Length: 444
Image (cartoon, rainbow, N blue to C red):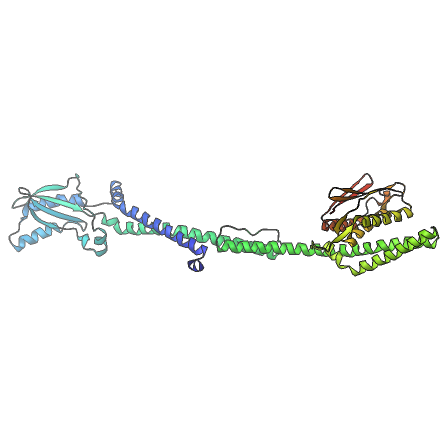
C-alpha cells in the first residue's frame, strides 16, 4: 500500500532531505561547540576590544575612600557607584582577603538580556585582566579584599555567531536538496529539447534515460515511442517499396507463363514439331493457361512474399513431380535455342512445400535465362538428392549487353523469399559474365 503513494522521486527527495537535515544539524552543533575557541581567536587577533584594564585601575584607586562593608545607606551608595563603573559585560565578586569570606558581588548586566542571557546559559565566565591574573587585592577604607573581575565579552559575538551558524547550517541543509531539484529540472529540460527534436521529424536522436525514477521511466517510454515511430515509418517506406516490387513481380510472374504459352503456340503454328510433340505442346499450353488462372486466383501469395508473414500452406510434394516440372522448363529453353547440360538425379521421395511456389521459383529462374542468357554457351542444370535435402543448380552465361539488368532482381527477390518460406537456402553468384544460382530445400 505504501508503494502506491510513494514514488521513487518522492523517496529520493525524502532521503535527500533527511540526510541534508542530519548534516545541517551536525554542522550547527559543531559550529556552536567551537564558539569559545572562535571568541578567543578573535580576542587574540584584537578583533574585539574592552576597557577592562582602565576600569580595574580606577577601581583600585577609588576603593581606598570606600568601605567594602557599608554601615549606612551613604556608604552603600558609594560602593554601588564604584561597581557601576564597569561595562555591561563585566561582573565583580569581592572576598575578604584574610578569611576568604564572600562579601558581595554583582553579575554582568548582559545576563539580564533575555536572548543573550539565554545563549550565555552554561557558559563559564572568562576571567580577564590586563596582566592575565584572575584577581587583584584592593585596599578599601575599612579592610583589604580580593576582587575578582569576570567578563562575558563573548556575548558581543553570540547573536551574530548564532545567526552565521544558522545560515551555514541552513546552506548545508538546502544545498543537496536544491542540487537534487536542479539536476532533475535540467533533466526535464533536456527531455523537452529531445522531444522538440522528435517533433521536428528527427527520430534518430535517442531520448536520454538517466536514473530509475518516474522522470527516467517517462524518458524511457518516450524513447520506446520514438523507436516505435521510427520503425513504423521505416516499415511504411518498406511497404511502399514492397508494393512497387509487388506490382513488378506480379507483372513478371504473369508474363512468364504467357511467354511460354506464346512460344509453344508459335511452334505449333509454324509446324516445327511432330504430331506427337504437337499434342504434348498443346497439353503444355493448356497447363500454362491453368497456371495463369491459378496465379490470378492466388494473388494474395504475392503479399505473402513481400510482407512480413512467415507462414504458408504446405503439402507433401513428390520429388518426381518437381523433376518433371523442371524438365518442362528445360525443354522449353531448348526449343528457344539454348543448349542444356542436364544432370537430374532424383530418387523417390517427397518434401513439404507449396507446389505453386515451386513452379514460380522455376518460372522465374528460366524466364531470366530466356531474357538474359547467351545462347552461344550451354546452360547447366542440376537436381541432386543429398541426405535430408534436394539441391537445384542453374548456371548460364549472361549476354554482354544484359550484364547489368535491374529487372531480374525483382524475380530473384521473390525467389529468395519463397525459398526462405520453405526453410531452404539460396546462393547467387555473378562473376565474369557467369550467373550461378543454387537452391537447397529440405526433404522428408
